[in-house]
Image 1 (cartoon, rainbow over the protein chains, first blue to last red):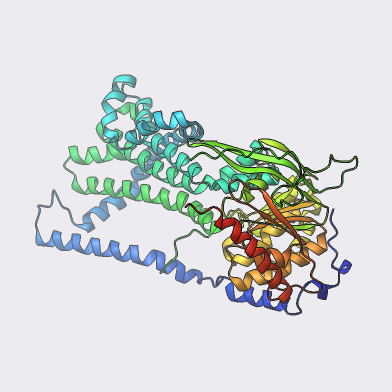
Image 2 (cartoon, rainbow over the protein chains, first blue to last red; image 1 turned 180 degrees about the vertical axis):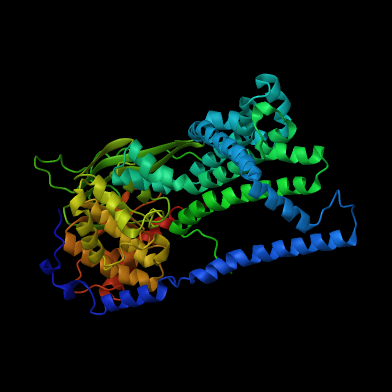
Length: 301
Length: 277
């Protein structure tokens, strides 16, 4: 081990007297600001604008309703929809439907991750797979999920398996593509550093490749969730059967069948809230943590 | 464009500085930190073969600070890759005392780790026991004058600080040889000047051998005990200068300037010889 003892040499032989001071001065001048915004201001700036936008939408809705542009069976008042929502929530029906749909969506999403990760890894690793399967996968991403429903019914009849097939076909391409993109973005310099530090293939995977590709993978996961949720709703809206339980899609179908506009609008709102809620609870904090650590978080101008 | 490897040099002509004698066979108990013996490297590309290095011999003794100097295409980086075993020579042998540490122009610190964790990774793979890791990190950060910066994120550090953390990480590998590939090229002049002082101090404190690649003649003379000029396409050793300047050496030192001027003349000759008619 090399000696880390300064006393073996006389300092003045090596450096100028002011080197330490100049270095410290440079550090102080160049160090990026570490001033943190107070939490309440951060919270305020991220929550207040969307709430304002929501209020504007509600006001427009109310005005259009009052003007009587459309009959009430098509456009109920915000208050009527709010009452209906409250009724659904208090009666427990809303929770039951959300639980059915959400658990199905999350299970499908988890299955999609399990299926997509090996695919993404293989495409990133083997060039011939990238050139052959890669474009197919990107093409699948642009397929509307609804288009898969008839085929899924043909294969699995009306069963949960049919719904999962639609969800998987919707989500797997996004997640796999995200992972491939994440790995592609890893600077080659990082693997060289890993090699110099003496990391083997496992060390490289664990300490370099995996953390370095995480931002891209997370973006893929996020998109994958959005696609899972959309595909699930498509499947639920098209197929109504007692075998499938009663999800949000079925709730909206019921509203349509009974010409119950407030119920239909409530269904829409619940689908929106659950989709955004999962995004906010699951992905936002993860993304914040991953990007903040790397100093990649979007800076305000 | 096809460049062929030059004829191997058989005899040593003392009057031709381009021709370097092969090193004598390594005696038993060879103590060189780095020994590059008649090394050639040819890259085969789509447009034919390109010789990056041709019959390069170079020996670095333990604790020696050698600067490799050359214009683009002199194979400086290829040579470092060979020494650090990122690549293998087409011909000849490279022997190194242990696995060398390597520093790049970019700090190449992992941005998902803190400064301390970056160093910890090097320590882990250098076999430092976990119990000693924390103390050793502080010791290394202290050496590069960044005490208390262990928990900093990489993006919270300035360019000079990042290179110092990268230096600490390289030292954490606990190798006797430190390779540096234009490590200060991306820094501003004032910071670079300070980094020169710091590197000299760290080198004296650790007693490592340093092979420092640069295209900056003054930097080479300011830092090195020896300055080795390489030719371009293919890279050959043109000349080897011993830098013998007493006392504190700064970039403004008149003797540094004088030797740098002399080397620059030679470097310009070498570059001019590549001009197409």
